[in-house]
Length: 165
Picture 1 (cartoon, one colour):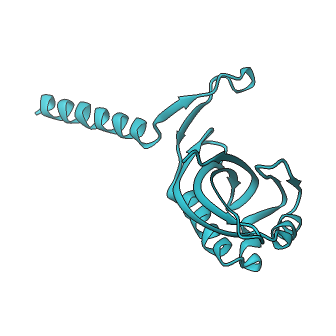
Picture 2 (cartoon, one colour):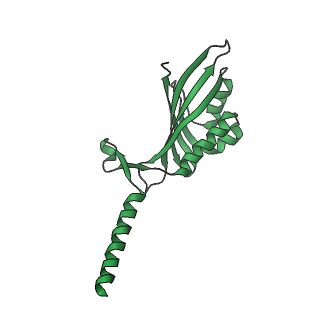
Picture 3 (tube, one colour):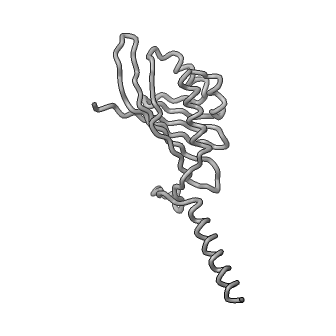
């Protein structure tokens, strides 16, 4: 009976150890000296859902609904090098843009640099068509990198890639 109990304890221990390591797998590394010892980990749906919810409000330009997603001290850098230190300034820039936009969110995922610290890095890709007032259409891809802590976007950085078709 002791042997069965010992065997059961060993199996249970092995199962618990393997479950613990699978709950937060490492998916990459950072080579910068200041981050030595840190690794990327898979993020959570909570942060992905925040970005998809933001996108739904953005599609209808509901700035009132969008505002709570951003921290009071948000830093936003657009793909064309404009920098904003508030959501209000960013929204004003969007409102003044004469172009019309249509887009599709093509992928979104979250990774966590330090699971013990809170916050996640969410990456979202968009296929975009922009029509200027004269009717010219520009197709391109936009990558957005969000850093989110406690449900608030701390920073948003955009990167553009032209459509080569």
